[in-house]
Image (tube, rainbow, N blue to C red; front, side, top):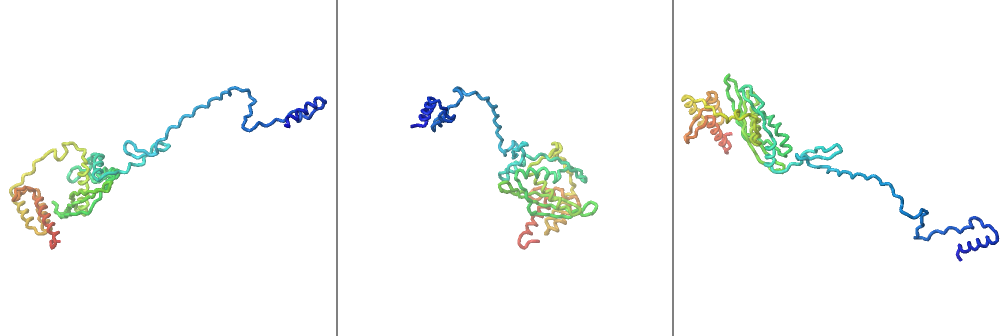
Length: 310
């Protein structure tokens, strides 16, 4: 028999006999609900009270990529302060592609230097370096000077009788591109000095000439100031000067050593005969200085042969 039925009979019996039961026995103990059956709320059935809506959170803006490339090709990185440059991307391409990029970026170099002795304007080697070194570095173009293959020193006499040391050098360069490809270039330079700076001047002149030609760097001069804008007539040489020029030319042909040829050139220089135009047997007309240089090239080539001079 269940406990609830027994408690009910005791309650009925106590009421008939006028006996009060203890409070804990007056009512049946509450039985727990069977498992799996939810206990109903004491609240009356109905729709739950509406809850106030929480404000909507704004969607966060998407963060940019930490590293990007600016329109000018500069590599930049995103920071809380904004975009900060990281440098240009690594250059690529062959040596000639790098040379082409440098040509497209370098501007004109004005002739701001002045030769006080002869009164002409020029572009100094430092101007050329300043215009090119940063661009070449950014484009991955390396210019390496090589050993000088030819150097021709001379000693000349000035009008006051002092010695002028002149040097002509042929300077070679190796151009190396970003991909490791390379090419060579060369240029002549000539310098003169009364002390020991002739070789340095000749070398600087050769480097400047090579760079200006390689990268096609213009000046800021007007067309009227360009050397080809006018063609002044040369000074006519007298018959006596021409005859003396032919005499010097024959002496140059008879010279068997470079030292003897240099002596012929010095005498021709002091006599003002180097620019005298002379005609050879084949009809070619050129200045005496050209024919002396041609003879020198023959003597130098002979000296390089086994058993030759020097």
